Length: 187
Image (cartoon, rainbow, N blue to C red; front, side):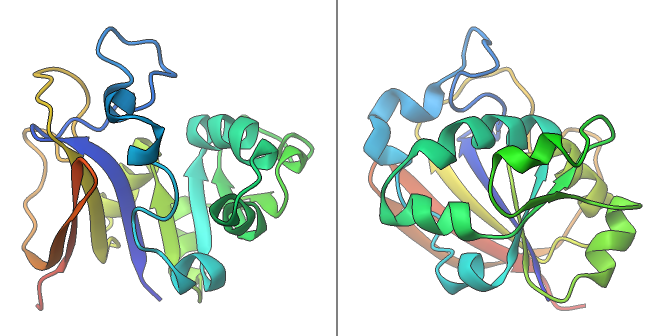
């Protein structure tokens, strides 16, 4: 089992509001290169998406639950079919019925991930990423970096955070962005 974090990011490491849904003044930066810049399996998840589980925080889940069920393309079919764990203290089981194969994560987030036997793909959901990183559970980062510097916004690796040794697995241009894959360095 691996924990894989996928994020849209800017050159200066900002990951907040890539689609503009949070209404920030700088939001929507990932879509400035057109919808094709973020469409499809840009993170090269492949079978990991089919055989693993998506883990989403409440805000990301609510955003995705409003978008993905209405889409009709091969990647949307895979997203809709994937099992989804929702990390939320405010949603109920009934709330998660709006997007197929979604269920509330029960108990502690870190414990639940530790018990999971499938690969866990965390998308967006910075509070979930922060908790998993603090517990040293993130095995891989897949970052789609766009050629923009915002200078402000929430970063994936905030100043003052803990250090981590990573190894670059690959880097490839994907449209206007660059997909990089990093894994935890051998201990």
